[in-house]
Figure (tube, rainbow, N blue to C red):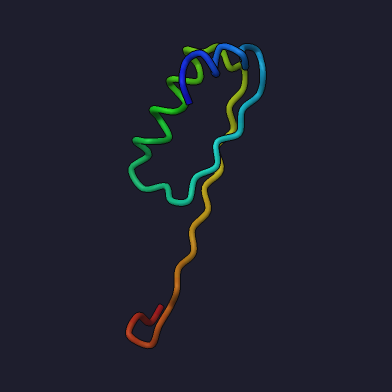
Length: 58
């Protein structure tokens, strides 16, 4: 998302949805850029799926 598009969202809410959250670097960068663009409220959601096989007992 570029700064021009973010500027159009100034004062609005934003939900960032990611597929994996490990170190959080990408998420932090998006939040930082969104705040610079004036987004008022940011929620972050992350989804992951773990496939358990016989070789990977819990």
